[in-house]
Image (cartoon, rainbow, N blue to C red):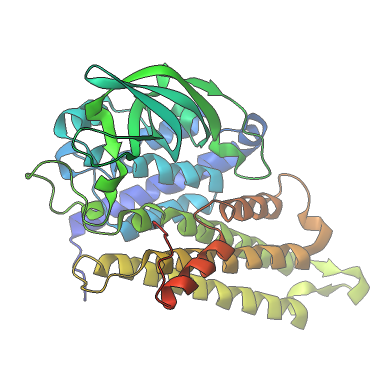
Length: 395
């Protein structure tokens, strides 16, 4: 099926991609500071917030440049070519704008019109006690990416809202100013994401700002009849779409690794080989050819992933969640293998802290450790579904 894109739509996408390049270059320039502080700078966060990128996953009523899932991914990939931590947040901040899109209009307007960035943690480790027209939320949550610069955050709790048959996982969306942020993010990679711990101590939230996860399942809608029929996230398996940015950012980072390898190899002479340029060596030529074709395979898998999401709108046989999971993690595996091979081929010269190969190597492997990116989990789940068993995978 062909897609016709108007010149106006193309101009919007080109503007967003140009903003993504600027965000990425700024984050790359300030990377040493981000590594030391375990967070992107306020400059990078403000650049994301000031760009239409931060609003690109909102329904049209809020005036943002609503983009397709494919364009969303390409924007994330563009930032990742320069800095993977910044891409992580350029992905997550606008992605979390999908959450209020499933709330009633009053709560949706309150959150969106305030204009702040949004974080979230789905792990249902908090508690909620009913208090009048709302609930009191308590708990500690780890891995709150970008919380230092967010005004809102959704936190996982299990509760039974009126009309529910039984308790289920929900996301109360709290004001970050009502929480304690514990800056404990000290990691091998993705240091710039600032994924700190947060603590809620008896924080009140009105029930209108509590999002049941069941509302996000396939074909989810806000609780009203007059909604944006073109909104991409209302017509796809939500969590499979929600997670698409992780393989895109790995693709962006891996392309940078390949380009850095090519540049380093073209300039490199090995004394043990009588000063032969490494680019003239069959050894490095073979490595370059294989990592490039492997990368193309990963890109093709990403294309299939997006096509399966796009086709799910009208498909009578939707793609199983475990298949989406397996495709994402296969992309991750290919890309991490490329990063490892580049490091081992370049040798000790690539190990210096702060160098591009060392930086992207750490960040790519760190993306692959995210719970939605674990290869062994995905192939086990997909194998179950291929033999007709329920894997229990959400996205």
